[in-house]
Length: 315
Image 1: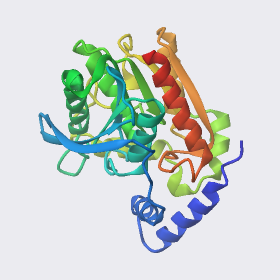
Image 2 (image 1 turned 180 degrees about the horizontal axis):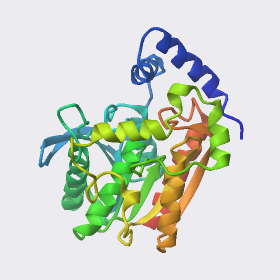
Image 3 (image 1 turned 135 degrees about the horizontal axis):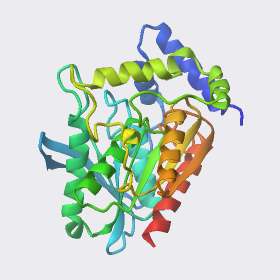
Image 4 (image 1 turned 60 degrees about the vertical axis):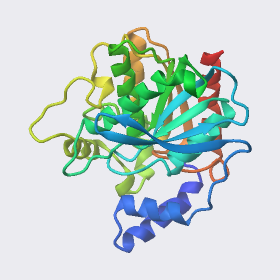
């Protein structure tokens, strides 16, 4: 499918912001502020609170559907942003969480994990993610959810974080029902890109390519100086043994170099006998969930697919 028409306007807006001297992250944030505010689905409620973690309190936002059933399923959700930007307020977190709470009729907990800075490196975000997830399991009864029906998911860096938390949970005996992973970067180095994908991404502006050099530089910044990747260090597809990984759904962007990481992760999971579904968001680029269904129709299709996966495994 051709690149979605939405991106003609989006690329023009990004280009205008870059011409003003903004960085790419600053341009994205500025565009987000200019967009129409999102309204929660009817009956969906939110609660902001904190949970305890080894690095201190972790802010979370809990979404409940209009009529949450007793012992409902639940989803832990992690936003994207390359581990250096983003929050639970961005659409990739707030809109996704609200829509899935409504469409899957489940509780959703969106986690505002600590970001990487020059002074704070890996594995802090990963440890925040695991600690928040552990808290949800430990407080399932109080929250009215069934601990055997807890899913973990996220988008982009949040998808990588979610997959890493799934592996860590399995290691300590916590059973995750399923993983919902939207365009995660799950490798230390980007796997080889297919000819089909390489041709598609030629339509993207250079600052948005996110190819091998971007991945290498980003991951180098995340790492503590002088340290090599350790087990569960943020690149879950690098793991040799994926036997503890839950059934999964990958939402992939058609025009996204990082799709190569998801495709390789899926191949590896299936080779080890682990069920892994794939949904290709046609015409989309990386980060497309930072929109509403009203802005981009494929966003709504992706929300529906994720909700369908959660409901099917919760039955």
